[in-house]
Amino acid sequence: MKALRFYGKNDYRLEEIEKPSISQDEILLKVKAAAVCGSDIRMIQNGYAGVTKETPRTYGHEIAGIIEAVGEQVTGYHIGMSVAVAPNMGCGICDECVAGNTHLCREYKAFGINMDGGFAEYVVIPAEAVRQGNVVPVDMSGAMTFEKAAIIEPLSCVFNGFEKAGIKPCDTVLIIGAGPIGILHGMLAKMAGASKVMITDLNEQRLNMCKKAEPEFLTYAGDNLKEFVMEQTEGKGVQVCITACPSAKAQSDSLELLAMNGRVNFFGGLPAGSAKAEIDTNLVHYRQLILTGSARSSLTQYRKCLKLVQSGILDVSPVISDLYSLEQYEEAFAAAKTGSNLKNIFVF
Image (tube, rainbow, N blue to C red; front, top):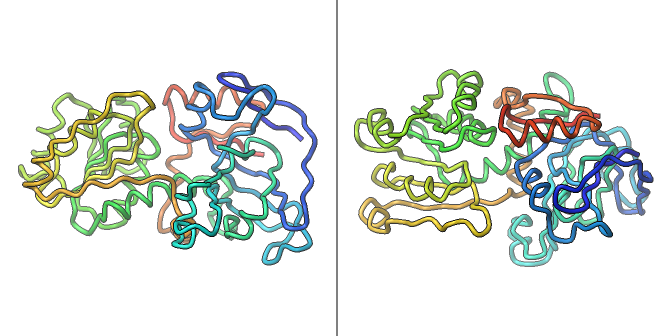
């Protein structure tokens, strides 16, 4: 089979490797769509722990496909079933796993991160992923596609932040960062009944894509964000701010943009070794602000997001920019690096 193999920092190539076999408690998935994530680009550029010339890895954790083979002890799944795959799995027995937070397990593993993922024609779903429910059937009737199913993973991460921020009807919401993640945050905010959704970014091309995805989004690219926010909120500030970008300054500045009892979700993590965000705790104190963070997503959140997309409540197609064959990997990665479009997806 064809697989895109990574050997270290900026060291990768498309190779023919042996099609994997499965044990009696595993599933073999024929990949139909695998989306490129910003974290994939960071791992390509910076390398990743354990990925060496001696121990290569296949990246790709936003995956959907068709079940090719099923181990004899696997129940509930069958050959030919269309599925999406939640990438995160835990040990299954620690307190976080028992609470349903397998994505926060200390022994956390994920497809395309610390085990082989979806930038290949086939991927093995190990027993723990089958047992924990990471493989989710998808009804491909109607407008559902494998490309949309691959977007469930980033959407579920956004949904985690959405739940932490507690967006309610009539809230005003500001999203800092106009990439596909920022747009998905905006879509969920609108779905929740936000009265205004503002999105800001330094990249005007990205903001134009935001307006195309949802004309009701209010976009801003100037150098006086606070003035813009106060004009839009009658001087009160926003109820919710989400920093969908890896910026310490955005995290620090966000507190000044919040209304009384406002909430902020630090969605975008900061690069290792970058400057730490400075927080004015007096703002937190006197305005009764709530600061939240979110990382990855739970299986429950993943399944909820699949229902939102499959039912048509949420249309993720505006964030799907371009489709590529695996042979076009350089084009796909270049587009993702430059931010010239939104989600880039390998299709098989």
